[in-house]
Image 1: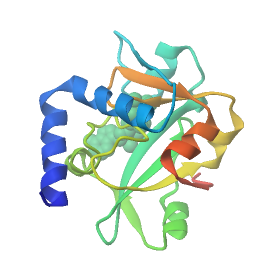
Image 2: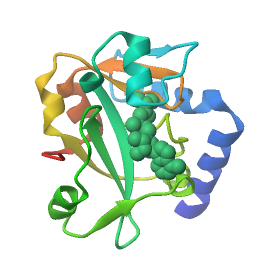
Image 3: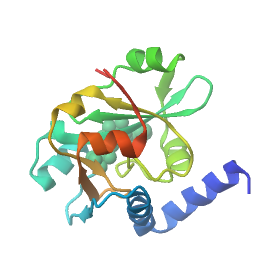
Image 4: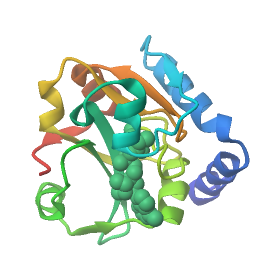
Length: 171
Ligand code: 5CA
């Protein structure tokens, strides 16, 4: 299978079965030796504000996973504090090439997750990852778990370890 075919298959299975995104996150957590548990809510956790309201934490403690597309067409994941607006110029400077917003199809194809449920790990393809340094200031943070009603709790140190992301100022 080519990597394009694999990405398309992962994207199709993510579309066909909402639970598969959560399963993929759980599997990635276990494979990395994390004991973090996925928590599902009846209410939506689609946005950082929704997630914070459901969890009962601050919006700043939500690690939102935003997908961008580099000028050369590669996926770039920026994991940012829920209160920060990502400055594309700062990410571009760290990456070494311009980035732009990714559309919903590109996000699904490259991560295997639908927007609103993009997790920081368990992706369908390899992504270049940057972590917002502001997230390091919290004892615990929460991230999407592959579905717009699912999240998991972790520490900033675990986020760095699980993603291998480069810590930068994104805002
Ligand atoms: N589950 C929550 C909190 S963990 C979550 O995923 N939040 S999020 O901020 O990471 O995801 C929502 C983000 O998806 C938005 O901030 C926005 O950047 C992006 N988004 C929303 N709609 C679209 C769209 N139509 N095309 C591309 N990106 C979109």
